[in-house]
Image (cartoon, rainbow, N blue to C red; front, side, top):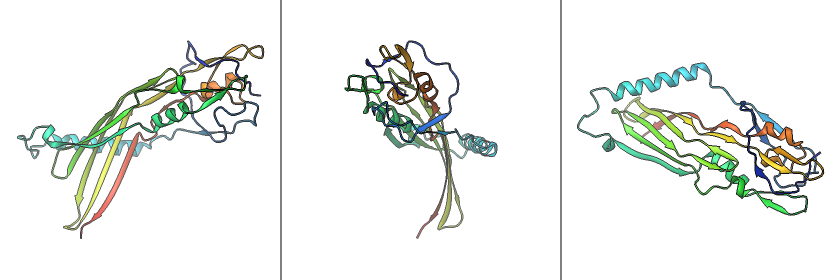
Amino acid sequence: MGLALAAALKPANTCPPSTVFPCFQQSAVQLGSNPFASSAQLTETPEKECPLRVKRLIVRFLCLGVALALSPQVTVAQSFWERTDLASLSLGSPLSDRTRAVSLDSYLLSTGAYESFAPLYGTGRRTIRALFRTDIGAKTEGLWGFATPESAPSYDLSAGLSLGLTHRIDIDENRSVTLMVLFRLGEWLSEDSCTADYGAIGGAREVNCRLSGSPLPPEETLDYLWEERTPDWGLIRFAYTIRF
């Protein structure tokens, strides 16, 4: 049975054991809802492993790009930045958007008042993603970029590095196939627990901040702390183009 909070949540001084928690998704829990509501329906979303063949394909494709970059076909007279363009620039990421959604929510105190999650999950410096493309051959471009780190009292989102390639294969004068491979390193989200005062009912307890008002016991909410990499860590895309 859930317990109403008697005081505002505070980040805990110690983090839970550093184990690799599975990814979980809330399907029927509203943050800040009545803690005595029906039990939370949490469904486990196991992290999908990249097949070994796909990993080998990515490695071979990246090695091909490096070989093309060192090929004498690349014009030496052109500097690196003359061959580089900005492909995309964005504020936020899938994980950053998730933490921002929590910062806009609130939780219920035992007094009946609602307390905002903003002091725990709000940040003034959201992650920025930048992706560049560099010509390394007549039909090949290298993709590279970065993501800045993001943090708040209850979580840390590490910086990231993006690496990839695009290669075009001309079938004839009017048709071509383009293959793009992009791999993101880093961008790991780690969430810290909080200390909540349940008063005479339970005293000070370590709890998952987001699930402090859920019907789960405080110690069980620790199993649902975020500890995962960005969901768009790998991308393979094929494009078939017909020119009229």
